Amino acid sequence: MVQTPRVLSYRDFGLKEDPFPFLKGQPITFRGIGCGEPLAFSCYNPGEKILGKAMNIWLPMAMAFWHTMRGLLADMFGPGTAVRPWEGQDTMENAENRLRVAFYFMWMQGIQFWCFHDTDIVPYGKDLKEFHANIDRIVPLILELQKLTGIRCGWVTQNLFSHPMYCKGAATGTHPIVWAHAFAQTRKMLEVGKKIGARNHVFWGGREGYNELLLLLLGLEQKNLARFLQMAVQYRKQIGATVQFLIEPKPKEPTVSQYDMCMMVVYGFLRRFGLASHFKGNIEVNHAQLVDLPVEHELTVAADLGMLGGIDGNQGTFGDGWDTDDFLADPMIALRIMIVVLKNGGLRRGVVNWDAKPRRESFMPEDLFRTHTAGMDTLAYGLRAAALLQQEGRLEAVIAERYAPWLSDLGRGIADGSMAPEAICEAAYAHQPQLGTDIPSSHIESHRYLLTSALQRCCEGVGSTHIEPKWRLAN
Ligand code: XLS
Ligand code: NI
Ligand code: NI
Image 1: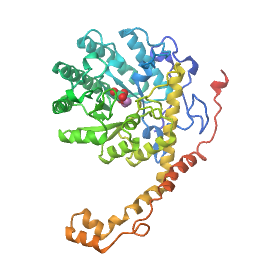
Image 2 (image 1 turned 45 degrees about the horizontal axis):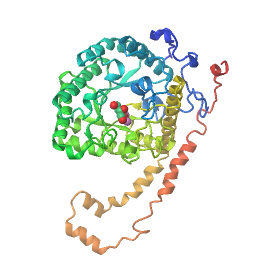
Image 3 (image 1 turned 180 degrees about the horizontal axis):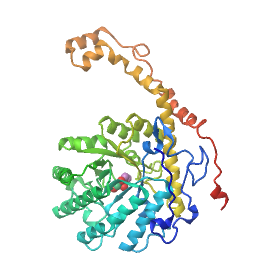
Image 4 (image 1 turned 135 degrees about the vertical axis):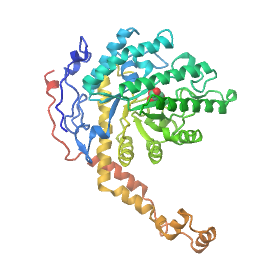
């Protein structure tokens, strides 16, 4: 289906002024492989078919409302530096204007999905009642802007970590009234998600963990968390919502240890409480790094369980040990991500949410476009290279050869349980395996180099037409 690109100006979004005048009304577009323009894609070409699917189907890009619209780039050593003209007073009027700017941003950046917490979009006000009334007031505008742009909601979530009442956790806190607030916020977002057609609903543990083990009733906290998730599952059914539930594993920060440590731990928890079939994983690169795992580990575990539900795109600052949420810049990480995603047949209902922010010294609105463009391009390089590897089938061949011994009589006998323990041990006494003959070298380094070589080759001869960025020259 060929869609005629529509042209929208900031006025169509109900904005009186162009919040991004430096773009001169021109959305970010693909301008040829390696074009090197900071405000043009040099690899991500949304409509281009890769292995039979458009790039924007393999990579359903989403904007994280909290970083892009609300993040002021503060850190513990100083206040925010970000220039964000739309961040005025915390009023409903401003919330509406900010939402308009957000959709205009996504439109100009070529992003098709958005993700947000309840607290991102409206002021909390004096209490939960006022907060939820504010949410009700903004929903019609959300629907209007989604309709105008065709941009859809990738996922909604509830912020159960910023309000001071959540200092000891939300569903794992010490007071049931806090649990009740957490549930009320979640229930509301289930309703909102349904109204606006959200594809997924994320549960990120926030402060669900502990700071001092000495003071902890582990069993109670875990049961309370399970009850919370069970009630969310029930409510989803009750309102007839079909949204996919996702858990976003994270090992630590802000707490010493979070219950949603990593995908395996999350799975164990869900199994224990009979919840496994209701959830998938939303895998964040930086979170995997915090648990000292490469992101492909988390993605592979999730995919193997049939639970790969989405990706939070970012990466940690090397060696920093915090969830710094840098934009993805490492093509090798991107390639390893995309190898797993391609094997999984894509993300299905999942999105790639840019849970990432510019560095504190990249404070201009223009940097929001530069960062998203660079991140989207990096992932697109990963996609192209992963597709090339898949087409060549060399990795698959290596894997098949590696595990071929399991197709022998002994292998089958062990795997399907048909071989008696005596016979298995007899085989062991009868044959002493030798390195080099029975057990070949893995040649790991050469196979790794296949990845380097794929990154290098994937762009040769692809869309090499460099289109002059006219609007830039006219500048
Ligand atoms: C924080 C998490 C958070 C979730 C949404 O570390 O990544 O941003 O993605 O609550
Ligand atoms: Ni995240
Ligand atoms: Ni994070």
